Image 1 (cartoon, rainbow, N blue to C red):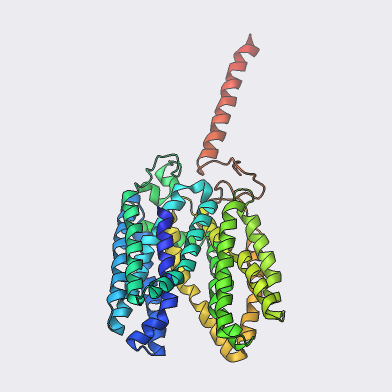
Image 2: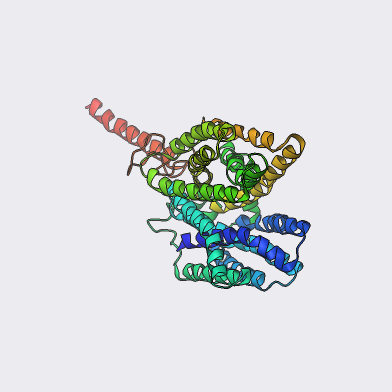
Length: 444
């Protein structure tokens, strides 16, 4: 049922993009107002979402935040359906973002804590659910319109779907701390703030600052934003590129976007199977190498059919990037998934400058040159993962080690930093005791 939360969230996102022209026509919105609907909720909602990880460090508070966020999630959709003015619509969209952060992001964090040895595999399933929702969203709107409804009716249907996901969350019992699926029980001081459950917020804020100074954490945080340039940012400019630069019709451009979404969904489905047999870093690096070859080919090759075929292959190659990198971020913060939520929110705000940068470069030098600059993205992903490997906080099970086979733990390292010294100390005591036993024998 936890995956239904991500499905509902992306269902809303997919339907919103398709419904925006209808909303704009119905409410008589200007281009400037449409731009505000995109930017203000993202910025204001992102700022409101920032303290979530700090304020919900223990399981009880996180559970309450998830349920409360789910209620606001549903109410914001109902508010959108009933909006009769721009300001009401803007307020509803703004409410949706922090509600989604509490309902969706914290549910993701709960899953990562529940399956610390299979974070890459769980993230692959999470991303597959999201991709399914993103593809199904426009189809849901089309079905509602075909049935004689409008965008308001579509948002009410989305509210019902979100309510069902929230109800499933209510009925689903949270995993107990000591269950087999939960992270191993450690000494609170060694396990971090979430294991201690009840540490003051100031302590969690210090954890965030410490994580910002840790390269093993910042690597994945930066790579997530860099990789997004060739995923979501590229998708945002794809239709414009095909119409303005390649001179295809808007219908063909819409088909290309549909092919990209469908190929991405196929890539997510394949990733679920592949990660059971191949390590996540191997998949990530293979996708980066493929993208480094396919993306320049997409920009240079003539012919509509050839471009669409290469676009589909490129979309499948980049599909593993987000789930693998996000899982690695969680793995670098073992037992501190709420800290990862806060860092992801902050990085997402900074990553919002990516589309702006591409747009400004396009204004100055033209869209072809702006998109040509994205050829550096797969190279950066490869360079960023070159030195990555098993390390502190990255010992999570299958799919993490470079040479681990299916069903085999990649590392037999201790669960905490304190285990190894204890084992060594115990070995030393045994040797001393053995020496004391031998001394009487020598005297005899």
